[in-house]
Image (cartoon, rainbow, N blue to C red; front, side, top):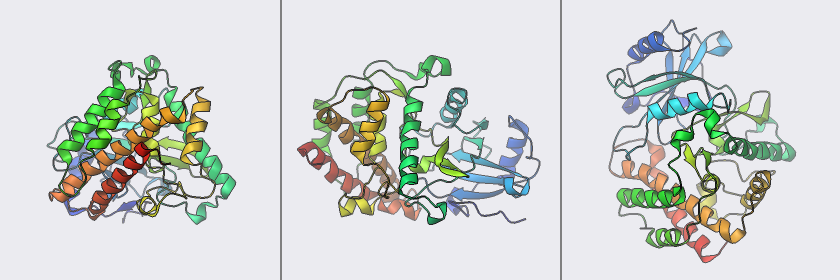
Length: 366
């Protein structure tokens, strides 16, 4: 039986292949729910991400044919930042969060034995629905008002996450106490300097500005740290409704406005400059989408927070710098030949565009 196509999935790249039979055996012997896992799945690879490797394991043709879909996550090859790509942490966080925030996928199992597929990995049930990429597909039939409703629902999902009661979720232990903003500024500065390659800027002026303008922490919440449209799953029958939130690799407990600023670093709107529009990854430019300023206003109102535009600038600059750091870590791997994934080749341009954006924001430009 040939695996049915799934949106965003493609044949597995040779450098990312693993022993499917060994993985399937481990899953059958260790899954929290073994229903439908008696055969060897056909495997494809999701191509949208640029960090951890994500695969679709389709059993017996998948749900449409009476089978089952699982998703397997594993770290990338090559040099990794310390503490990054921790599959056990990502698995356990979602398992703990599920009772308080049911939009996380259902965990199936975690494997810490590198001998099974060459690295640790975890497996979860696939959340069925639509994931938006660069544009809103015409076949979703969303008009301007529907897109606006989708946008507001997405922002409200982040609000809901930030209001999860930490002690009830059992995730309060992730809180390292006051100093989250300082740790983030210092941590991302260190990561950027370590990953810098000669073909990008040094960001030293941006890092100095962030260091000098740090606000005190807001009360801590669970932060996703990679909240964007291609990590949201939309309901099959109502694509304005969010039914899943994916990619919890960077989630922790910290300042909610740092999370919002990081989310808006991806938010390219219709009136942005041409270089920013060229690196757009999500359909935030579409008619009906809120602007960045409208997102901030909506979020602050929903959570009864009072933040001035001048105070907000720190979070926006930090978000852009942090995204540059993420992009540079990926570019570093491509620059040094640690991956041949052609999608990674453009990340140097992303870093340079974000460098210019940080400079403009610090100077007071919109």
